[in-house]
Length: 501
Ligand code: NAI
Ligand code: MG
Image (cartoon, rainbow, N blue to C red; front, side, top):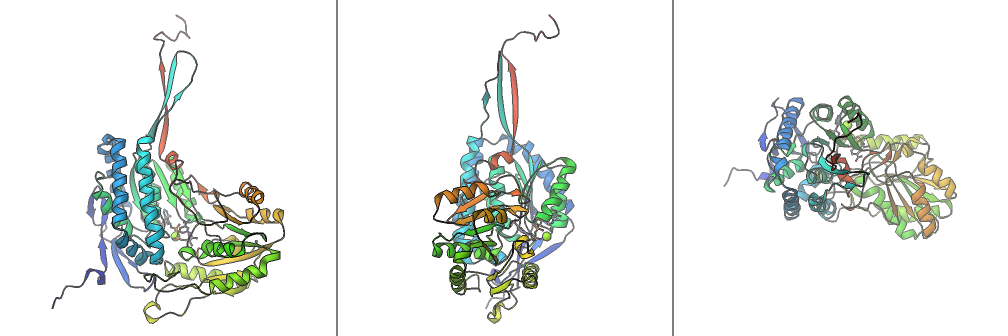
């Protein structure tokens, strides 16, 4: 009989990854991250703060000016490609960890998150050798060209809703362009960032190119955003914290990109294929337990089809399986934390006080004993919502959809744009001209026509208005991680002559 516990029954332990070494926090502090389905401790993680961020920024600077600057574009691409292959090979293990740390159903982590993580590293591997300057047709005996240079040390602060994917969106273009990085994962979901750190080492990236410092936002995150030693900060998270990050960065005029909240309109016209639109409404709000910045949380339905549409939506939503996220048949797992769960419950109470009608959900489900400490919430539908209500204006970040009716296209566009956010929008219609009119009229960075939540590493993603600025993925992401330098050469070989011979 062995007294050794199997690894999976004891909490995992992680240190910080700084300059290629695994180290404890300077303070010696650690924090724990629970499995949100059961409340059990999944891992104990070193808790970085200002002192560790200082060390990580110094390591990133040293790597940027040293070893990494001598690595060819081809080799950067090869390392990124190798990383994408390692992720593909380890998909079952990484998907299980993603589900254990975040709560998302295993079907999503296996078939959505992990493949997209690998895809992003693979896509930007190809870009490493294709980041080019230009020659400019300036007049006279002059030669003018541009160089595209990496910006330097990048601080990257990411959220918990897609822990690995948000790391990939940020790391891949930054590395392709030759930058070095200090990554601060969310305190709710640090585990896979540290696993990714191991694969980054295995893929051959030199020490200090990627440094990973988990810790709390108010300490490690704030220290990174305000650090005078970084050249760029990239942030994904709440609009509230995005403003703090931009303010901190302004002190040093650090370059900033922000991917923040949303309150997307998902619009169903009477001429839509109703079954398709119902499935799209569900994909828009229940995917990832609604913890999606581009969630279709305002569901606009044309008055003429509202009753028929809601009946189908209610019937289909009743079949959603909420429960054990490790079960292949589960559609929705727990919310990420007790804090998020109570926030969602709070919004449901507000909606009812404001006069909205609960058609489904509005509370936590009854589950088996093993999951009674988990942070589960039912798929929730509110009808009779008015666009001015708080439930329609504020980001809930949960499986809660507000149904708002509209009369015609003009009325709709006005309501749809009446929000501080502008990340995404969906439209369901069989009228092709209306679909494209709408795509132009909506103030948002991503428009989905007769589909929802489509992503590809080659297609840019980012916000208008208070949803942030900058574009991730696609070639536009490289603009955030490169400087353009203009170089002038006099080909005449003569003195300039302006001040006389
Ligand atoms: P948050 O914005 O506080 O956290 C996101 C990241 O920022 C985490 O890594 C956190 O540690 C870090 N952070 C927090 N305070 C910071 C500071 N002062 N300086 C630098 N970094 C800081 O989001 P939170 O509290 O987890 O969730 C609250 C709400 O934010 C959600 O209900 C949702 O509405 C929104 N949110 C939006 C996300 C998106 O994808 N756009 C992702 C996560 C949350
Ligand atoms: Mg917060």
